[in-house]
Image 1 (cartoon, rainbow, N blue to C red):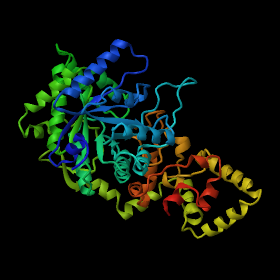
Image 2: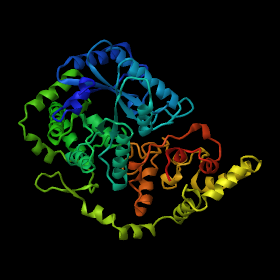
Image 3: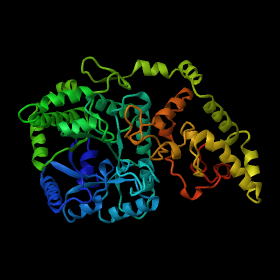
Length: 505
C-alpha cells in the first residue's frame, strides 16, 4: 500500500484516523489570535493520536487565510494535512493552478468542496463565482497530467429531512466517487441511524470507498446557530437543542456533557465501520485531546448503546432503509414506503401531477433535441446551413424568446435543462450546480435565498420517469464557458455542448 500515512490508514480495513479540523483565521484577525490558532494547530499536529489536520477553505462563506498558506507553516514536517479546495470564487484555470501548486509541495490529500456562499453581500462583495462544483473539480483533478498522484476526497450530507433531498445526495456521492474521490467525509449531524445508513447504502451499491464522519464539540452558542440554519450543512434538531440548553444551565455550562457527546460520536464512528472521525469545534488542543481520552475509556461494545441514544434526527425524516428494532439502526432491506413509491404504477400516477410545461418540454426534447431524436438530423441540417448565413442570429433570437420566459434562461450556450428537470441552474441556483445539490439545503430550501432547492424539485420531476438516479451514472458536467452568449440549440445540433462531448444521448 502506497501513499501518505493518512491514506494508508483510511484504506486499511481496520484503520481509523482521527483528524483535527483547523479553521484558518479570518481576514483582519489580530496578531495574538493568529498566534493562538497556529499554536493550537502545532500542538494537535504533534499529538500521536492525530493522524492529520484538515484545513478548511473559507468555511461559512467567510474570507479567511488560504489553506496553502497555513500548510506552509508545516513545511518539512511529517505531519499529514488535508487541504480543502472550495470552488467558490475560482475559475477553472484558477483551480487547476491551485491543484498543481499543492501537488508541487507534496500536499496530495485534497478535499474537493463546492464551498459556502459568500457571507459578504452587496456592491463590495467578492464575486460568487462557481465555475465548477465539487464533482467537476474531482473530474478536473483526475485529468491533470504531470503532477504527483493525488488522494482526493469528496463530501456528502446524510442528514437530510426529505427523500427529495437525501437521495440526490447519494446519487451525487456516487458521481463523485466515479469522478475520482478516494475518500468521503460526511457532513455534521447527530443521528447514528443516518450514519449507519450511509455505510449500508455504499455496501448495497458495491462501493468500498473509505468514509470519515464529522464530529463537532458542541457549545450552546454553536448549537443555536446550527439549529437556526445559520451554518450550512450542520444539523442540530429541536430535541437536541433542548437537551443542550438544559446541559448549558449546569455549573460547568455543559462542558463535560459536550466532551462526552463528542467522544461517544467517535466511538460510534469506529463501531459502525467508518475509517475515521473529523473532529471540529475544539477551542484549544486540550479539548480535542480530552475527547480522545474519554473515547479510549469506553468498553469495546459501548458504542451500541450510544448509537441508540444519539439519534437526533428530523421528526418524520426519510430513511432509505427499514429500522432494525434490535439495534435502533437499520436493516439491509430498503424502506417499504420508498419501494412502493418506485413501482411502475406509482411512477405513472405521479406523472399526472407534474406541470404540463415540464411534460411538453420532455416531449420536445425527445422529439427534436436528443441526439437520437427523430427530428435531430433535420435540426442539424438547419443549423449547419444557418451557420453560413445571417439566419443564425434570427434563430438565436427565437431561441431566447422561447427559453427566457419558460425557463429563465441566461443564455449560457451549454444547456443542462434536460438533466435538471427543466429548471435552469444558471438562474435558479445561486451556485449554478449542474451535478446534483450541494450539501447546504435545509428542509428542502436553498441555503442562500430560501427558495426551493432546484435539485429537490428536479428529483420530484425525474422520479416519475425513473430517471432520478441518472446522475450517478453519467459523466460530471463541466459547462463550457466559451459558449456563453451563443445559441445552445446550435451547440446541441452541431456537437459543441457538454452532452455531445460526453457522448450522452
